[in-house]
Length: 419
Image 1 (cartoon, rainbow, N blue to C red):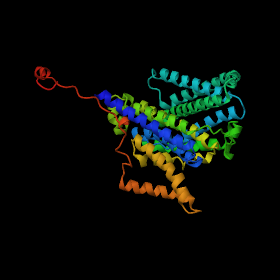
Image 2 (spheres, helix red, strand yellow; image 1 turned 60 degrees about the vertical axis):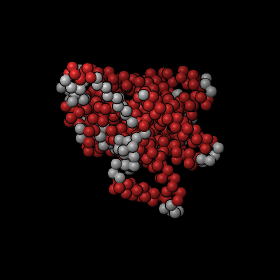
Image 3 (cartoon, rainbow, N blue to C red; image 1 turned 45 degrees about the vertical axis):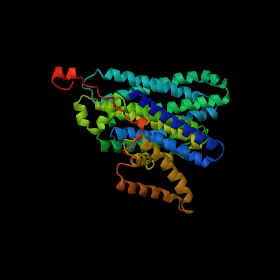
Image 4 (tube, rainbow, N blue to C red; image 1 turned 30 degrees about the vertical axis):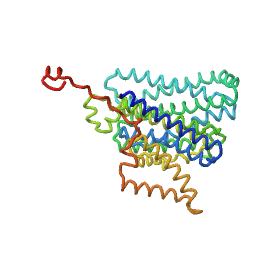
């Protein structure tokens, strides 16, 4: 009976998602939803992905973070550079180099982590220094190997139909952007996650500011002339369709749900509930803080990559520290620790901010929408502090406990009590 219940919930969830996708896609195809409204829906889906990552870090793990927008920016620029090089420069060198860098850096982080786990008494800053040396060496090796692979991979992609090659490059760029954000988060989180929640929030805010400044000077400091620094990057292909954002959003929701229902997910939540008690029960608090932070940043990188290919233009001002509060507002509005609330609030945020308020405020008062929706948030916090859907979750996303084993009279008599 339990299996049938789980199957029914899964069928209802995925069936409803498929119907929603089909209805929206049909409305876009027949022109009922114009490019403007389609853009709002895609922005809403992107904001849902980045906000789910922050909800995992803050809502489920209890770590107050303002660095989500920095990882969002890293994902956006990383993916945009890869697709720009393919579509405008007709080379796959960006793809092969980043793939090899991600691979070698990941192996270096894993190998060094295994090695240092056997070393006792090593302080966190010394370990961080060793990680930095290993990462730079691995990145250098990845650049050299990736450069050698660029020409054959370019020839292979050119042998494919152009549309298929572009879609493949885009898909790989989005995945690689997410992994890059995750690896940066792992490295950044090693020393920073040892701080208390408030200090951690300040450190992550500083990280977002640093990323924005580096993007302002990306053309001069790092040699990425196509990014154009503070002038903004143009020429990014418009690859993010409703189908792409829907698939990635659905994948992120399912991954989040499965993670939270696993033993690792229960450990992540236990750190939020009581860190001292979790440590006393033998839970590796540092490990699970880093796990939530890395996965949440992975989601931010994926969202940034999708965002970069909606309008085809990126500017560092889109990633300033003021914007870093947007996902925080969304998860508070939807309800901390609620996957359903986060997704609903993200779409509501996009429709309200870019649709209702932009279109219906009087001419010359469009920027007042940045005043109206914080006021709505303030009113909501006063009337419903738990958020719009803080106590609600779709049945598929809820954790269903297994049934208790039935006690037998024989077992009860043998032990003198319930078995």
